[in-house]
Each structure stands twice: as C-alpha cells, then as structure tokens.
Length: 299
Image (cartoon, rainbow, N blue to C red; front, side, top):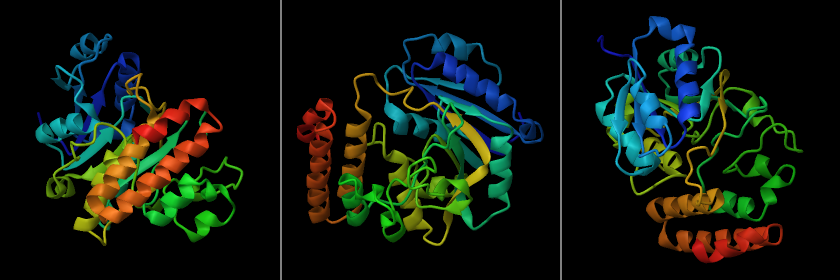
C-alpha cells in the first residue's frame, strides 16, 4: 500500500448502521480518488452488529477493544498506527456531504498558518449545528452558567464558550462564514500529524466530552500563533450522541469536562469557583426539568 497522505480515525460504539453509512459516505468523496488515504476504526466493545459489519469492510484497519475505553483512549490507539501526514478524527455518527474531506484537506494543505480545521456541522434537517467555540474562562463560564450569554450583545463583549447558531433568536452569524476559533468539536477534526506528535494526543483521563477542547488548548500553548479554522464550504451531517452510553448524562459530562479543564490548566481557586458556578447552573436548570435536581451533587 502506498504511503497515505491522510489517516481517517473513527472510534465507534454500538453504531453499526451509522458507522456503515459513515464509511460509505467517505468513499463517495470524489476528491479522495486522487488522494492516498487510510481508514482506521477502533471499536469500543460494541454489543450490536458493529464488529461483524466492520470485519466485512475492505481496505480498513480495525482495532477491536475488549471493553469501552472511551473516546480519548480509542482515538489515541488510532494515532499510534496512523501513517498519514494529516489525521482526521471523525465521529461514527456523521455523514460526509459532497467532497467535504478532500475540500478541507486541500484547504489545510494550502494554509500553513493553520494546524487544524473542521467542516460545517449540520443537523439531520440541514440546519447549522453549533461546533466548538472559545476556550473556557471565568467570564464566559459565568455568563454561560447563568444564561446571560443568551442576551443580545453579551457574546459580542465576552467571547462565548458556546456561540449561538444562526437559528437562535439573536440571529448570530458566527457559524455562517470561515473564521479561526479556539476549539473545534471532535466530531470532525482535521489536523497535521506534526502537531499531534508534539502534543501527545488526547488526555486519556477524559472518557467522553471535553477532551478535544483540552487537547486543542495544549496545541495553542505549543503553537500560540497557529490557528484552528471553522470552514463553511465542507459540510457534514452530525447526528450527535449516538455513541454515548445510555445511562450517561450529556450535561453532567460537559460539566465534568469543563471542571477537569480548569483543574488542569487554571489556578486552583478558579476551579473551585467554577464548580460552584456549574452547581448553580444545575440548580437553575432544576426549575425547568426535575431531572437536573440530582446534578448538583454529582459535579
């Protein structure tokens, strides 16, 4: 096999049909016909038909784990055997539209000022899905937790942890044009292998949620003048949450991911403050949904 230019790494867990559809959509990318690439799938001990389906796939490197190691560890396994100059981390619950992979790869190859990029993520109904944002700090976590970032002009003054999509009532245009941003959602993350090697991949203390943001912060520390770009030309559909463990709570996992980031990268007094703010967020949410009443004690 020729040396691949691109390694596509997919971690899967109980998403047999979605993973199959994802793989088929990759192979429909016409631009990849002229680009040597490899696909690496790491299955996290799926109990559905994923393993039998994956074993039937051609031109696929397959790693079968005996237990669910989580998103970070699984992707690091893929990194270890990847041979491409570029790595694409792709969720199994995604569909590549048009030639999104080759488009984003060509863009990154032509822009040395960037070390990574993403495509525009769409919901199944083709509406724009929020994707990444700005690194968390005391101000944007405070405004996010209290819902202040939903007010007009607040996000213009304080760069938001989670920017709003254009269908939100403020009609933000953040996700409607190409731009650099602090972190990109791991559902589709194309990055140069050189920076992956320098930063040692994902922090395996993260199981799921927040690991891409933390890793990209370390990339920023390593290459403060380089950039991560959000692109609107390449597009993918992201179903979202398909690989999550059924008993896990996405909001609780996000709380824990934010708190882990502060514990690792910010002074201890900030992490203590953020924990209180996140507990307040859970408390306020409990007025809307009784389910959130238990979150305060779990953060």
